[in-house]
Image (cartoon, rainbow, N blue to C red; front, top):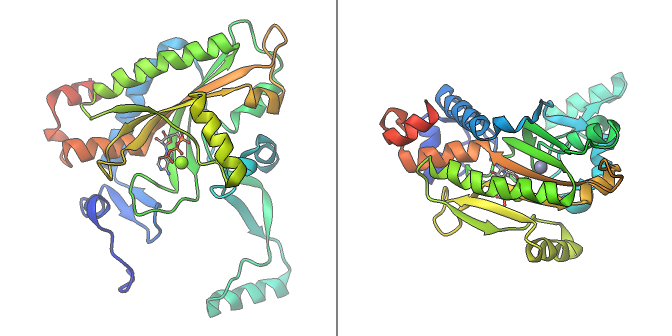
Length: 306
Ligand code: ATP
Ligand code: ZN
Ligand code: MG
């Protein structure tokens, strides 16, 4: 380990000392212990117990998506600062020799890297829209999907709840404005009840995404004013600034228009999603109930290990 680098402090240091998270030397990039994964799996199961009866179609994508689809999604317009792209070496032997020299000299060796056809998934629902679009118009009842993916966001931080690679479970609803807003209202209630059953302090609030640049400020204000995004916040790293553990997003016709998704009646589809930050919820549980799951409150254990 680097001697001069600042050592992890506070909750992050505790998580690493307890073995729940494994330091890789990169902020926001951690290994997870078996116990940490067990808690994630139990929470994953709890989500299914709350949402599984709705008949969502289960789809799992790898943590990367088509670069073409990513470009079309508009992500680069809104969040260029968070995007992670995959590049690869495509040079000849001379270029290879140069690359190795650069690595050995500790200088930038990534010059000759070219972009591949894949980028890292920024949110679990991003790979889904082009798939749904390709299927043609929705049925009368719309559509509902159950997703989970590792997601990448370039936001390195000492806050253990702000990772660069983390898992997001999502339910995503497609349909008329009525169908989609009803879905979100249902999950606003359900999400709060579900998290209350885990005995952690909660607070629901309107929120906005970190849209880039000056034009982004207007988008963020508009998102807030129209109450398009809600977050269920739980104190993890800080009491004053609690962490968003669940998000409830109404995209209106944004993705429907981008991808040309139509309802059965031929209108542009509206979409909404509820996102569960798997690592954040696990961290909230360890924060509030301690590192020894055997000693978590019986009511919480009964919910997670029914
Ligand atoms: P924040 O405001 O904290 O940056 P967000 O608004 O960017 O969160 P969303 O884009 O709504 O979060 O993502 C859905 C869920 O994914 C969030 O509710 C959160 O639980 C989780 N999440 C988002 N970013 C991270 C991250 N960097 N590390 C771990 N979990 C995250
Ligand atoms: Zn989503
Ligand atoms: Mg964010």
